[in-house]
Amino acid sequence: SILIVDFGSQVTQLIARRVREAGVYSEIAPFNAAAEAFERMQPRGVILSGGPASVLDEGSPRIPQAILDAGLPMLGICYGQQALMAQLGGTVVKGDSGEFGSAFIEVADTCSLFDGLWAEGETHQVWMSHGDKVTALAPGFRVVAMSAGAPNAVIADDARRIYAMQFHPEVVHTPDGARLIANFARHVVGLAGDWTMAEFRATKIAEIREQVGTGRVICGLSGGVDSAVAAVLIHEAIGEQLTCVFVDHGLMRAGEADQVVSLFRGAYNIPLIHVDVSTLFLSGLAGITDPEEKRKFIGKTFIDVFEDEARKIGGAEFLAQGTLYPDVIESVSFTGGPSVTIKSHHNVGGLPERMDMKLVEPLRELFKDEVRELGRELGLPDIFVGRHPFPGPGLAIRIPGEVTRERCDILRKADAIYLEEIRSAGLYDAIWQAFAVLLPVRTVGVMGDGRTYDYVLALRAVTSTDGMTAQAFEFPGGFLPRVSTRIVNEVKGVNRVTYDYTSKPPGTIEWE
Ligand code: XMP
Image (cartoon, rainbow, N blue to C red; front, top):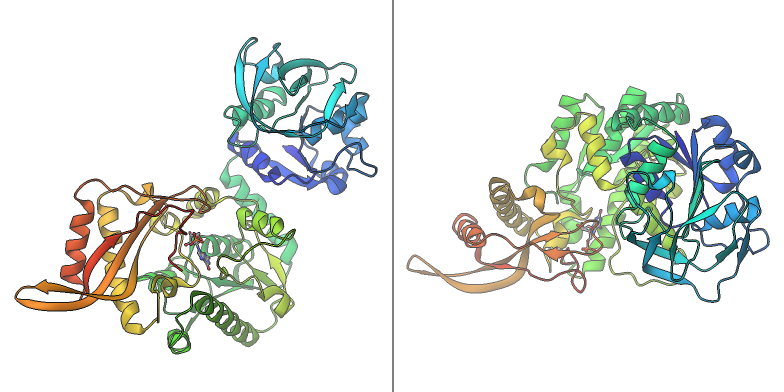
């Protein structure tokens, strides 16, 4: 295995992801807990992350001495490089100007890290981000790649198998970065690269058992992939100590609530409390037209209902959540300066404090696609695992204006036709998210010999990698006309269909 020592970079988790992709098990430990992790894990190699500090500042983080003394292969990235130099006898000085963004490095010499990948004389694109500079190398090191701004872009000590770089190989803006990290893990450290999601599952199960002991856990299901995968994994670990609560607000897509119930009770035999509170939500939403007010009402009501159910179950000290790594970074990076609330996201974030519960979050290290892979590993059906993201407030934020039961029913029918056509055209997996929006606008149409005066429906489909930015999906010719015709013919209440071409930014994916 490989230990990743975290010096506080925003992208440390990406290093772990690249190591996992190379088929090698890794764990991240913050620099001040790295010595214990090292002792416990007995890793075969160590990666030192970047970080915001300067090694020249007093009290800045250091590599634990036990790790330096162990004689293992090491890879230092950015701050990790500077820490290595500072601690092994090199010199680091404050750079007069930082270097940030894309840069080109020239390979000056061969080294084991580059074997089969980069050759002398080649130029490669990398992503730089640093302020301090290494001016004198520690004994044993030599320069193997340089850039205009960083004469020591990559340095190597093949004898001790220590490599360090000024740039970030873990981000996608360094095109060969994943291969460099894989080369370190497999070629330099010599690990086989046969670690799999099956082993992640086994490791997490052991961790959950250790954390929970004989305690009881409750888990809120949203109908989405993340909470479902978390629940199935936790159930595998602790069986009947887990109770799932599905707060059904009546704002799900067609057939989804039933799917959740039958999957959990039927296929997995997981204790599930299905609370049907659609009337409570719909009556509370009556008269609300402001998007933020809708979101706040739904978020608060959800928590109230969940809390009630948890109280009825009684005695649970743990709350399970399907928190993913992007949620972790977002919440960390927003703690600093003021940020504008674009939308108040609905999740159960406020619950643990209010209910004084400890969290079980087995997916905290994973990205969405890895959660899907884990879901498949756990035997969740593809139709469930591959499902497009769906917002917590559900259809309520896809009905601008007032939400009524009638409008929800119309939207559900139209949305189901749209998704059915997308699936049968084989386009579902090429799209990040596709859905219909029911507009509170009526227009005039003609059907047969009669006049109609019905709602307008907007169709949206976007591609995206993480939901932070998005582009409208271009359907093949003939697709949208076919869907419009079907919707207008089959869904009573809709007589006009439009397609939304806005990208994000400046639009958002959802309409509210
Ligand atoms: P926006 O509309 O902000 O959406 O571009 C980005 C992604 O987040 C989803 N989304 C939500 N997910 N609770 C959620 O769990 C919410 O309140 C929420 N609002 C938006 C949206 O569907 C898209 O995938």
